[in-house]
Amino acid sequence: MEYDVLANWEINKLCNFRCKYCFNPDEIKQNPEFRGHELTKIIDGFNNLGPVFLIHMSGGEPFLHPDFVELCTGLTKKHCISIN
Ligand code: SF4
Image (tube, rainbow, N blue to C red; front, side, top):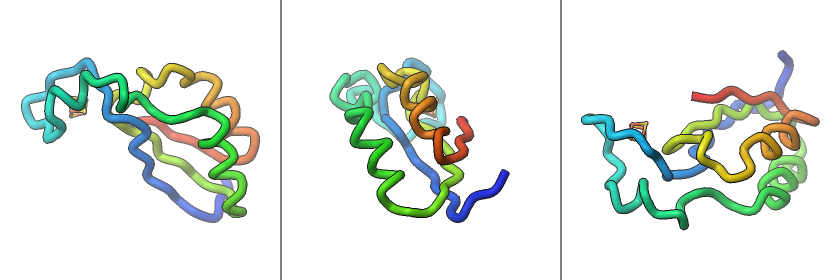
């Protein structure tokens, strides 16, 4: 896996878990406004920066992003991803 820059990206704050150690308040974890951003803007945003990224995606719960599969498909045309 070759990349230029490693990026840690908290893609949302939405989460359906209740970990005792969590520092994100429930009102944020349950608020759809914290679900994520527009798909094309995200992908273009990374692409327009220039380097190839390794993007570590976390949240919240990243899989609650409404377009998660499409997001990963778009990002991996140029970049590498990991999810935690
Ligand atoms: S945001 Fe992370 S730490 Fe907090 S409840 Fe969800 S999974 Fe647990």
